[in-house]
Image 1 (tube, one colour):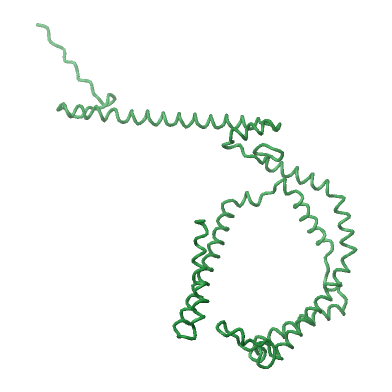
Image 2: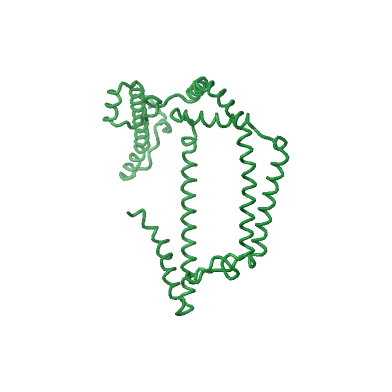
Length: 305
């Protein structure tokens, strides 16, 4: 529920936009306020989309290897991608292979579509009648000299439909031309399916051996729950990797404990001379030198009487 609260930042100004536009006839203030709310709605939506993009990009950057690495469970998808790529490579069509009539129709449709697009851009006033967001829907007229789509605009739409039908002609020819080659290429590739899958699996296992347990080694070993460990053992999976992981964890803990003990001993050794010096100063004496820096006093012999 808490995660859906930010949606209100977009819903509230969007709702207020319609409410303020309903009162636009009373004062110009309501129209301007509605425009402001519409701008806020658009801005908040843009911020949300930017946040979604950043979150997706961050997740991809942190887990790129995990998201893009090949997996055994995706074997069928990998094969279908390979099969489609091979068929497209073997059934490539060049422009010179297309008949002259089909080429003429295809180019004519492209030119016609481009001309209609320029007509709508440069002569929009002759093609359409403006209809703003604040206009009454009951006064809307679709076709006619005073309608939303004027006669010139209707002719432009009709010509665009003709251009798309000309492109469809090329699509129909291309499908019929590639029907037999695609069938032959598919039959050849289907014979290679088993050998390709076996080679792909072997290459995958050689590049990255299994790091877990299970049929594809896809169950993690770190922090394996005891109940899951019992279920894995009952299922008949090899649990030697679990024991090896436990041994590794115990070894790492022992090393950490030893390092901590060594650090504590070094700290105690450094603190001990300081404590002795403090005690000496409290008794009124000077600082005590370490043993390796103390010079023994010479012994003066006493003469015999």
